[in-house]
Image (cartoon, rainbow, N blue to C red; front, side, top):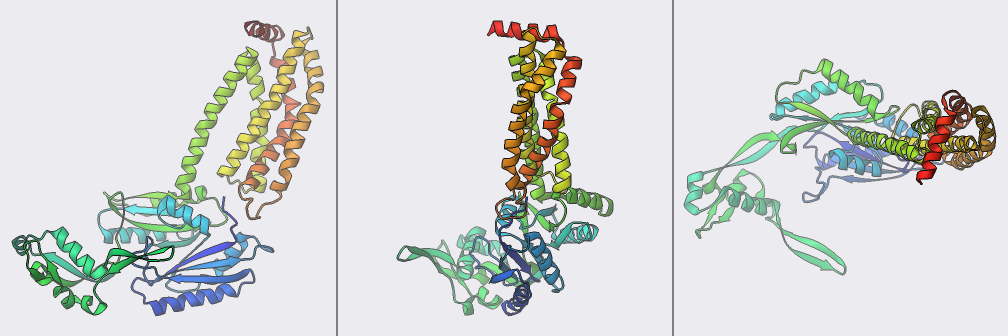
Length: 480
């Protein structure tokens, strides 16, 4: 589920090549609009990041941290207002998230959004065209917000084409030439400078005047293995060209990312709509394909894992019950309580959680099933005990149900009442996981407790075999 962190992180990316002054002006306009909202307390901004940073960004990218007061409004309402206020800023891709959510999304897919459609293929220009088609196909999907395509554009570049014969004459390899030029132009860390407990990398490179323009690069002097120092122009051809500002890869393959967030709908249903639209409107050529990453893929894997583990757990529970009662019929009657609990849990899921089955709700179902099985064991085991005391099947059912009514009600009441504060805390920071868990569990307890005292006795009276159950239990006791 989405966290209520009390802080928004807004990413604003303009066209590649946008200068620092223009980018700062756009970011300042965003901050001004944010501060007009009554729930926004303060903002802070970063525009661009250092070239050697782990998350380097150009001057065209800004990140704005927004401190939000959630005492009167929920984060979802504030986010919707902010998204509406910033939607009219032209030429800027704006995505809105929260710090922890951003970090999780970045670890999952490399992008800071809920959904990342990664398009793979060999040609960058074909990838850009496909990304535009995909964006056009999915734009307007209900629940899809912050839709954007990774900013790629052709920018002026200087390219070096090695002169193989000249390089061989001086014993220079392409790697040696590349490293030398990179160190002179981009810089190289040679040491560290310490100030108290702090350590700073010392990077050395040429001053800007000696590395600006093609002619300056041609005149750079390179040390060669054979001894003489020669200019770059003797080892490579340097010329002006245009090329992509960035090339993104994953598993060695080129890619472009169409990213988006969700609002008002669960990620799974939104992704299902996106896939239908793409398959119906976009013709993806051979050697090109797309994948859906982000929260959707992670949630799908987690749901599949929990589903398989739940089946294994159910089988183990059945075997344990069979081992305890010595009867498959008795074990099955205990497990009848599971669909009774499932009914209330599903109803609560749709009534109070919008039908969104997230990991927290799935954990709630697991908790609920444990309580339901315990209540079933209380009833069935007592029925069998009464049968061993020579009670008739009907007498065992009536007497056993009355004698186990209080323990079952106390279990349900104590568990349900303990979860009420969590169920009522929806939207409060720190209760994003507890609330769905509590709502599902309480809903299931309501139905399973009531139906357990009605359905299980009726089924036991209808399908229970007095002699078989008693003899199976007695034989099992003798073996023990």
